[in-house]
Image 1 (cartoon, rainbow over the protein chains, first blue to last red):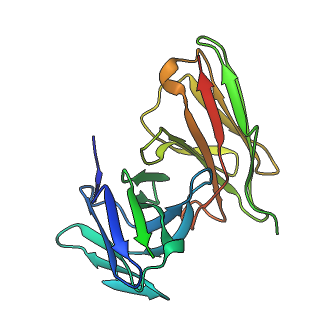
Image 2 (tube, each protein chain N blue to C red; image 1 turned 90 degrees about the vertical axis):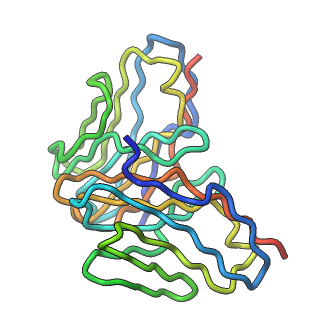
Image 3 (tube, rainbow over the protein chains, first blue to last red; image 1 turned 180 degrees about the vertical axis):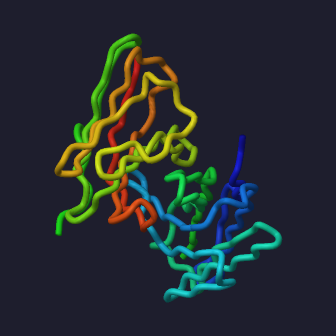
Length: 112
Length: 112
């Protein structure tokens, strides 16, 4: 059962552009929504996370937008750089049950 | 402060064998979660340990089992290995069961 759907599967953006990755979830018990960045051969690294009591969170060039009623959230990367080229995963966690569900990932390529 | 470490880095086993993977959590963290990441997919939650007790489990069969030790390090054991068990196995630690997770670099398991 795919509980977190992520799109697009791949994304190509020019340097300086905005990268947008979307995720949708089904389980209303999810209460923590992190985004991870993963480079080849490495484990995922936390970028930014949000809880459902806020609609937006910004940290540097990274912003999460959260729509609780639509059960959707998205990652915006402003002023995208070639060093941002990586695979990005959204996740949704039911922290009381100790369970996390990841999307299938988006491969981002930022062209110089 | 040391990060999450995992051993071994790579492992090759044959079908039917048993394997043990190890994880040392980040200093001060009492919660460890294990994930399986198949090629081109997002991490799939296996289980979580909080203060030496299993705190949540994903949709994995009982031949996937784990332990957490008093120093909060952890082991993942897989019995009767199958070809589909070939994947990157990730360990993540956090201060609390509900807190931000920090991933290790993973163990690449190949089952022949």
